[in-house]
Length: 219
Length: 219
Image (cartoon, rainbow over all chains, first blue to last red; front, top):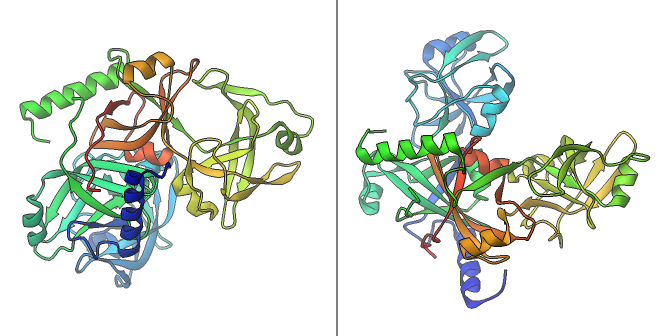
């Protein structure tokens, strides 16, 4: 990169943001990278882990959400993902969230959907040492931003709105459009991306995102 | 998606583009997805494949470029990529191109670079049944567009220019900025993305890209 004044300003901005994350910028949105994971109903949990309780392994950023100690294998027509983490608490529908790149490995053409929107989604088998069950509900998560009601007001968005988000990381400037706003009273500001999206945008520890005006499309 | 007139127009545009690819649109840029691969010097090739010639396995889109029949394992400090394809013809420097997601598996923090820009890049070991050598030059490819000189004129860009590119695929609208223009007399119009970038933008067989004005940044 040529060291023009413009480029120098860009570099200094990036380094400060890498150092400070969102601390110094109220509009900066922290990024949470979601690895593949599973949500289970109580019934499916009891089948896969008979006699066990769902145990907390790690608290997640959204209140009440946690990674459990339990994992299971996800088996598709052409491949298997081993030791996929079960997230808690239990839900009203079981659901498997994978990255687009993992759809090729499993051999399931999972659609891009918001959590819980499972109509017409493909099925896979879940296997533990105790059981193997079929679960319908494999999705690639649609990018979204958890936020408080105050955040939503500040950003001028409401539940379900689609916004464009800029990630200005080292050597990869990326704009993800169609990012869905999900305000809720108890949510903490955090954009969720999957591993493909995080790598494509070169997201590192302190990388943050900003909502920008929707770029004009060619159609 | 609500079936407003605007959304219907978007859907019809996408379906036509999925069907016809770039045939009906002179500004549409075909997308080539690069899996991880290796370029070798004649000397390194001879060490890894003693007594062999580089044999063509598959012609690539850019003239003279091909995937060879030869593969080797790429060994990093924390992991190995098996059977990575060697591309031909031989080059003046050996080079290993991986996706950002694969840097974690190998345990090498490879920088994002244009092909051939190898100063300060990490090393890995390459292994075949006959030999194991160390090679310096692991990079994550910087997104770029191969184009003819006529394409460059039409797009109003010159060698090394950075442009913003829109990929308007089903359910994931993505804008990759800092895409480098690489015009050359004999190049064929094609944007190169790696697997992370293709998955993050939900690129499918006929998905195309368009150059758009650079979206305004927050900095």
